[in-house]
Amino acid sequence: MTQIIYFDNATTSHPKPEGVYAAVDQFQRLIGAAAGRSGHRLGIAAGRVVLETRRRLARLFNVPDPARVILTPSCTEALNLAIKGLLRPDDHVLTSSVEHNSVMRPLRRLEAEKGVELTVVSCSPQGWLDPSDIQKNLRPNTRLVVVSHASNVVGTIQPVGEIGCLARKHGARLLVDAAQSAGAVPIDVRAMGIDLLAFSGHKGLLGPQGTGGLVIGEGVELDTLIEGGTGSRSQHEAQPVHLPDRYESGTLNGPGIAGLAEGTAYVQQLGIQNIQETLRTLTALMLEELARTPGAIVYGPGDPARQMAVVSFTLEGRDIAQFSAILDQRYGILTRAGLQCSPGAHQTLGTFRRTGGTLRVSLGVFNTREEVGYFGRCLRELHASAAGGQDG
Amino acid sequence: MAETIVTFYTTHAALCAEEAVQGAGVPASVVPTPREFSADCTLSLSFPSSHQEQVRAILDAQGIEISGLHGPVD
Image 1: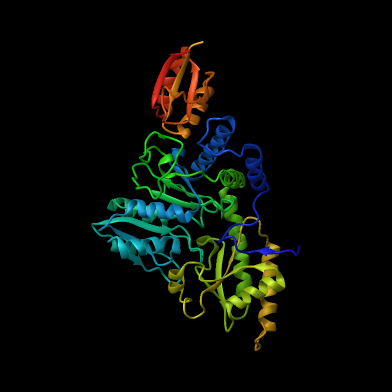
Image 2 (image 1 turned 60 degrees about the vertical axis):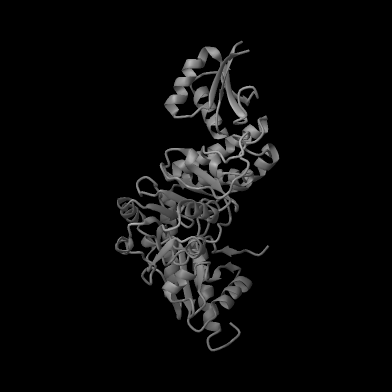
């Protein structure tokens, strides 16, 4: 198989640590049972795996009670649970102009159909959300502030702690979309005043696809999104109230969760600070390579200290989708071109109409300096060879 | 030997309880919940009744909620 260079970790991380593949296989081979259902030895073993996963995640995010780490099939489902579970008609909600569709689509639906008032606070062209703009837009009926910890398009890391403070003073809840940040930057739900933390299991936490979760803070009451079998209170046809069961109807993704436990352990072993430093170094190298590429326009902060290892750029006079395809076909470099499910972000950056989005490179713990250097050389070779031509 | 059965609302609570109680040296284990006590949750904690008060104290200290306590049963 040809060597590939995977620069699409913001979509999903690849590869995974070896232990993650093994954990998924072992769960299926040796346990196989569903957690929280039958009382036999395999069912109990499955339950222990799930408990351990909750504990590891609770330690990572500084959550006092692991039962408040609800496991979901995805960050999107966690966001839907939080948004739809909290907001009522006539509530006001604030969000930023660089959110992913997993935030915007549920909010827009509630606005259109359920009488929820929505204010989208504009970010700067680099993707910054100014906390004073949040403050200005708070209303007596503001119930929730929703913000991504880091933009999936330009990587801008938002001042979540400050925003949390403002929300709390106002009596509003803070929901943070940590899809891009979990496992890559420190997250402390208590210190940052985060009431609801939605996270993805298959990006920075290095788990398999089909995993994610929502941390529900003490005192936060959410309506359920899904009701069904929980393996508890089975004599009642009403959804149980006790956590975590209340928000976990249906069979959990046991193999996925087993993998997520290993991914989380790997992250904790490496250490978030080390991961952050490594990714900052790679981001700095990437920005340098792009700075040396004639015609490359880079979006976002352009500062490794203030962004994730996510860099979006366009090339003057080039179709980014075609360029991305050639990077793949000719050089085995895998990137993502387009709107990355965040039309608002591209509106904010000015890339929505002009270029139809950006070419995004997103680095992970398994990427290397050599890969970034090679990418830079390929970029310049490709761009130069196509100068004035159509063949690119 | 007389056993005590503690029932819970969730599997999560039952497994946490088992760990906490075993960790304190009590010979306890999760068992399928006898139907006469509860249909609430599949798993209950079973241990010798002589440890009943000790177990109650451990679960209280850990904030683990129980749905019932039945003992001694043979």
